[in-house]
Image 1 (cartoon, helix red, strand yellow):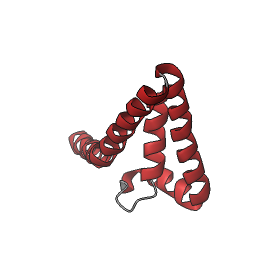
Image 2 (cartoon, helix red, strand yellow):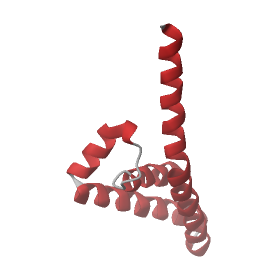
Image 3 (cartoon, rainbow, N blue to C red):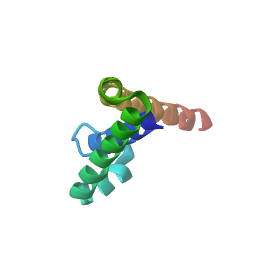
Length: 100
């Protein structure tokens, strides 16, 4: 559950970047329209995930596991979200070409 919260907050915080895939413009538009609320919700979810990890694993171990999970999620979102968007757009182009 905490890992999912970190993943959602990573996508929210990355959606304000200029490198966010243009294919998902509805997410980017929503988050850029309310940048303060996006930042508040993103960091709140990160804090909630930290509390869940610390409660589950104890103080120091929970913090270390939370730190590793944050690094993993942030780097995964930055690396794989544009690749995923590109693959999905190519798949739709190929499907429309096959239908014609």
